[in-house]
Length: 230
Length: 230
Image (spheres, rainbow over the protein chains, first blue to last red):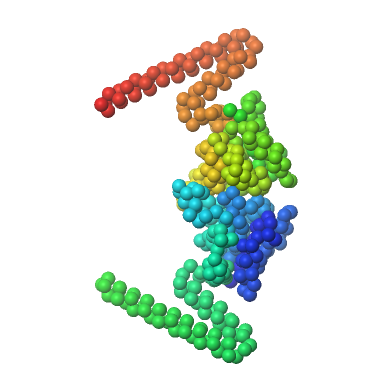
């Protein structure tokens, strides 16, 4: 699976959040980090990029409950009618994900709260775009008040963000386990120090055993349930 | 009441809808027609315009379920935090209206329909902005498939659009009547031909009589209801 991250930020150099996200992906393969710059877009080359990837991510800070203007400019220019739904449906069966950061508090995004609407509601225009383009709309990945996150929360953010970008099945526990095993196996194959690589292999084997135990447990439970249903 | 219409259209010269809307207002007082042009905005002068008006209208064609990028650029530049909600609340108690045209069919904007979401849902970011700015959010004024409207529908559009722009109470029947009377009285005062002006005065007097009859009827009905409630 190849992922295209379309980064829309009018002041990228000063964004701690975007720097952090970019660093989180520094060792991930199959990820294209694509920054939008002011000016007109080369429509053909942007469309080619979209064609070449399976998961498309719009990544931006929330300005007035939407993306910064530059992403809308990109949409207006690049997502031509024929490309999206007129004749071609070039994005059909791809995925659309939204990584959105905001300085506002998470608890404000609710009826009666400071922002009055949930992020799911505010991001409807992107969901509608995904629908029209016959794409799968991924549940958005919000980052609230990055500047106030603890170190532990930031570590968690790295892992969940990496999965949102690269894990084909990031929403299920099973998919997350398989992804971690894959990451570990990759790391082992790249590690040159044999004692390190042995330790990692032991960890991987424990994780695999745990997963297999869990799968067996799940299988047993479903058997019991089938018996009860009869 | 003074109304500011902020027109965001990347290709205004070729827009039949925008030409039609502009002509509809050609004889209306207290309306400022303000076209956004590409390039950076003079923030101070835009903010002054906003301060000087009571009803603010965002008027645009729907591109990818939102306004064209230029309106977002204007929002990102002009609607600074302090101006809107930090220190000043400069827009508080003003009204925000949306005049949105679309080439898509009205019946597509529904769950299960071609566009999957209602315009009310898709325009949430503007509603959230109005809420944050302590503005009154007016029900949006949509124009579906203008090119296919009959002459009669276009005449109706003129009247309802004029009211959306200039009638302080366009949502109630009573407010609509008063507005029509006001328009007619203005026309009479400007008409130089005395026979024409007499005819208009007769029409006005009939409309006023009708309104008074209706008000009396409403009053009688509410008396009957009060009696029943006792």
